[in-house]
Every structure is written in structure tokens, then in C-alpha cells.
Length: 111
Length: 144
Image 1 (tube, rainbow over the protein chains, first blue to last red):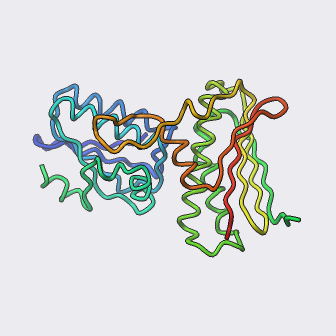
Image 2: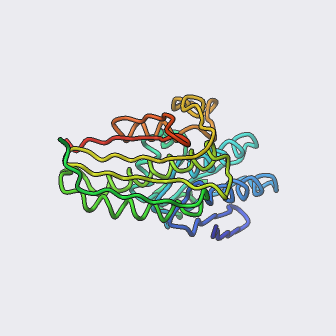
């Protein structure tokens, strides 16, 4: 999986550079988010701008990251959901769980 | 008598790397559905999602991640409906054991178990039953 990480010292931005976030590649995102929170990062934004498709495994990887963050008093926010991805969050009602922002900048500023 | 317009049969190795290929084929198919008057872009995504979920169940649960196994996908389009079938050659699984209802509170959040909920939400019916040499997960979507 192609992930691009940027750490400005305050917030870690994780850009998912994949068209699909599914059962084939989502485990890597789950591990990466777990690693960041274990290292003590407290503010993480996952940018889904390039993701056109997400399945239950992709959603599960983000839920895992969210729970990991919550248990450590850290924060995980999402940005730039494409319409089909957003519809999957709505179908599973996860849009009520995550803080979701239209742009990366909005998500970064929200911390 | 239902008039079959399109019937596709695809076999792929029991590996998640083929999910995107099947996803692309299913989205292309949605563009060919003459009798569907709804949002085709949404339908394309829904077919992609439910086939992905069904394939992952077959690959991970039924065929126990054995890369030497294979899964077969059969897509049938009639005048009235779309039928998606995913065949495995494995020991099968209990559909209800991989299901949970969608939880709304953070305390009850689960990493897994949304696949069947998604399939049942987007399709009109989802069944899993034994056939000769394995099992089939079958989904129907009416065009009306």
C-alpha cells in the first residue's frame, strides 16, 4: 500500500495514495496507524482524497485506528472523502463516529 | 420466463490481490444494465462493494486463505434482476457468525463484521448454501 506521511511536529498527516482501500491493503493502514499511536503521536489526520472505493475491511482499519487513538487520549480525523466512500460511512453509520472534514486544511486546523 | 441478457463466469485464485480486477469488471457491467433506471454510478459502486465483500468471505472464511484454491464468480443479468454468485470450494462458514448489527456508540465499535450488513443493505436478498463441491453466496437485486 502506498502511504505518504508528513509530520509537522504537531499533527501527522497520512495520505492514502490508493484508489481502493480494501481487504487486500487495509491491514497495512491499520498497522501504520497503530505504530503512530504507539510512538506517542496524539494528532493524526488520514486523507482519503485519492480513495474512490472502500469496503468493510477498509472501514475496519480506520475504526481500529480510531479506537487506538481514543484509548490513548489521542485524536484521529478524516478528510476529503469521495462521494462513494462517504456513502459507505453513512450506510454503516460510521459518519457519526468519525470527525470528517472536507479538506486536509480544515482537518488540520480542527486540532 | 426470465430472459438472460448477460452471463459472466470468472475464476480467480483465492487471493485478495484479484479484488480490484473483479471490482472493475463489475463496475463496467453496471454500465450495461439496460433495464436499470436508477443511479448507475451508485449501483456500480454497490456491485463492486458487495462482490468484494462476498469474495473476501470466500477467500478468508470458506477457503481459509489457501492461495492454491480458487473462487468462481457468476454474474447473471436478466430483464428483471441482477444475480451475483460467488462459489467457494471450502468448508463454508456460518453467515450469522460473521455478522453484527451496526453499532452507533463508540463503546461498541468493532473492527470487523460489517461485510454482511453491507451486502444485505445494498441487495434485495443474500443467501449462502451448499452446492456440489462447495458453497455459493448468492445475491439478488431487482431492477424495478
